[in-house]
Amino acid sequence: MPSIKPPIAVFASFSGAGGVEHMLVNLIRGVLDLSQPVDLVLMRASGPHLARLPDEVNRIELGTRHSALAAPALARYLRRRRPAALLAAKDRAGRAAVLARALAGTDTRLVMRLGTHLSAAMAERTGFERWLRYTPIRLLYPRIDHIVAVSEGVAQDTARIARLPSEKISVIRNPVITPELNGLAAEPCPHPWLAPGEPPLILGAGRLQRQKDFPTLIHAFARLPRDIDCRLAILGEGGGRAKLETLIGELGLNDCVALLGFHDNPYAFLARARLFVLSSAWEGSPNVLTEAMALGVPVVSTDCPSGPFELLDGGRYGPLVPVGDVDALADAIQRTLEHPLPPETLRSAVSDYTQERSAERYLEVLGVAR
Image 1 (cartoon, one colour):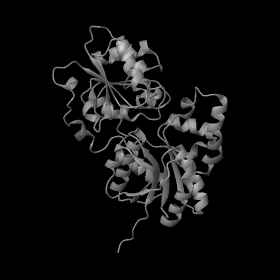
Image 2 (cartoon, one colour):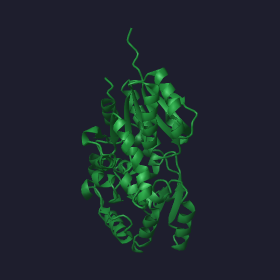
Image 3 (spheres, one colour):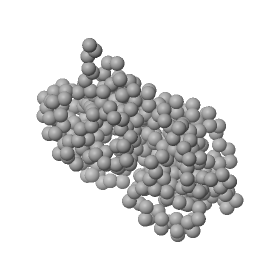
Image 4 (cartoon, rainbow, N blue to C red):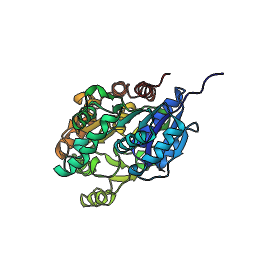
């Protein structure tokens, strides 16, 4: 009778429609496809991505809403379940996992995934605020067995802040390209702006918050020459919606710029866009930029720290412009609309970002034999 594999545990918080939750579900699907059982250990358990979890996932809710309170419950899980390894999804989950493992008294291998270029995210904070943020990192990260960064820039930034040797950090590309991607992209899209014969659509996507810097994208769109007949749509929700709506009205763009909110299937929009634009102030590895390229959609991006430069190979696969530079972004949008790269070139550029390859690499780092 074959032996039953112990599960790997993924420790996370699902509390919205963000990219981290989306990528974790993709990763879990990929790991299950490799015949590795998975426990998903959750602090918070809400949001649309939970519905995408396969039935084979053993979902465990700790009943805590904050990482600082999760360590005792996670320690009980580690003692009872004895997973083969524990993957903490973000910084706060990682710090709680360090404390939980110590409380549990187990030797569970602990790996943490990081997707944020922290020094860029903290750039506008005071020196004291940065000290408060960095001190627990420098105390706790050395107690983590290994760290996975989503880009070289995130890896280098983390090593510098946490004062870790580079060999303790591996770069694993996000599991962006799934077997379902092309099928989802081919599904009907009911929005009238994407009907045959309508003007070309420029698309942005992400949470409506400061990091994504959609005001720069909207201002850049407003500066396009009047003879360029196109529209701009932004997918996503967030606390910045009201300010963006006001800006659109002040610029007189209500007829050609729309905030479309959250959609379960953004790929039906993305595949039909003439151009995708990432206007972020910082990113780890921008998933939607990768998805656009995987669907053969031309892209323009800010050269924000740190993922876009790597993804676009320094501008080879799409223009990179300075963060917040409205004129440069408008010029790059116009040039790319007029001279787009071939779809097959863009698809080839992101061939490493598959669900299968990412899952294989995570299992290697987690030390799980296949």
